[in-house]
Length: 239
Image (cartoon, rainbow, N blue to C red; front, side, top):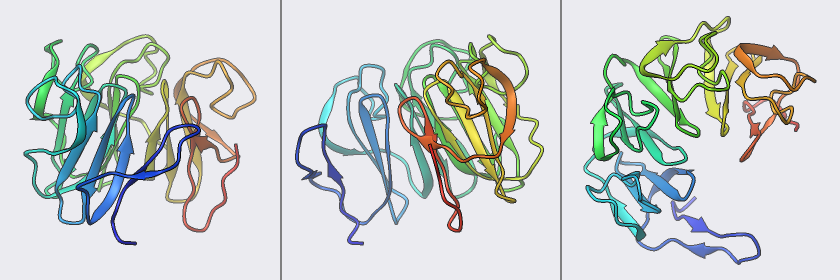
């Protein structure tokens, strides 16, 4: 309620993150963290070997650093890259780019935010392990980056791509989320769709084979390091 952020590890008591106020949303990556204020500012701290903090260097930071971004409405921290959506619907990315997860053909990491081309009207972003996903206001989903396990959802399992590709979605999405090597969306009708890696049954379809395209399931699942959670305001969630 007061917009402060608390952080803790297994077996440790929560401690307040210094210098953060009026925080509306947070996102945790492989070892770095993003915080979005009610006023559209973005802060980052933690591991930074690939420039995923977006501060213009690859030095780690134990304290939150303010990024050169204004009027942001959503953020997402992947394993070693980051995403943000601006009020005008444009998307920015920074950090590791080994598989094109920044939307750029260059394989070099980027330590400052760059705009992802060919994306308009974005309202939400999600980031997994070297994969990026965005939802637009007109009900579209785009994916790009690492695709070995089918997590791009474009029917081309094993193929990575640096250009955002439209996901063929049966229902209009209301929210998106990413696990490590799989993705999901919840439709406006409350249906759940999942795709990508399924070695540990994380897609919830009672099989352990990967899915290259979104699979509708009847159960709702929880989001974690290898599985995920979702729930609309009127829905429950199970794992």
